Image (tube, rainbow, N blue to C red; front, side, top):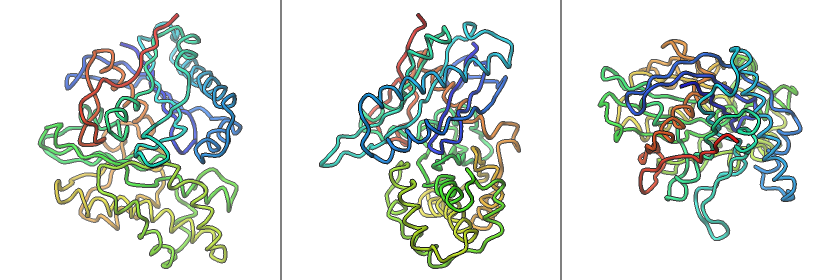
Length: 379
């Protein structure tokens, strides 16, 4: 089957679109990447998403419009990738759209029930592209008491399980998430959770200091030095002490949190702040490995994907913090670092169409397996 996966993450750095051929289901799944590209997310849309994620006042009319605006953008991404491959969108068997996370609050409290919201109206995508669309993957897991994240562990088990080695699949988008795929070849042994910030805090600092969207290649970080006081402060962040499985997002590590850091360290060099925030991304990964994971599974390889895989500083700090683990990128094993999550949702949507559950209970904490996503058929 021909399919397109769409992923727009918390970093808001673009819309990842992967055209794939997928065959079979479950452990017999075979997926091949045909084309991949990343398309810009307009600045005006980014600001609307940030406003929602910051829990600022937003009118229902604005939220409803944003849902349709994102749907149009996602549909345009499908059209462009199909044009690149010289096929029609109507030739697709399905589109898998993760959607843009607007708010993610999987823990109930006195004010809110557990909830999650991803926008990017699937009906718009189906109408514009003339094919079936599967979306809204997280909701049913949250309804079953899970955190609705991370959801990619199932796809990682299908693609990366190896009886000869235990692998960690570390994605570095806005937020970092890891899946441990042990050499036991048993999906019940998978461990997965969000490690904390990946690019989110770094990107926010880069915009503040240099009016750049990100630290290309980690150049700014590598030219700076760590700030010991800030390191100690970051190491004490309460998220690190939460038990796994767990998930987080812009609500905890977004612009407001970074702004408070930049204000307190306004006398420090910009490069030093960026270096320390970049170190914190690597520290969060190593901390969770030694504190939680190593007691269950010893890793042979940590395979990095996402935008942060191009940041040489993150990779350098990881190698220093985890010297006994081989630090690789997806390209080292024949895959595409940037396309990984878009492909993951193709795999999840394929399971949905086969009426098979694909949440991993040890990762999300849900009470039972669930068939993820909602199906919108073409008009």
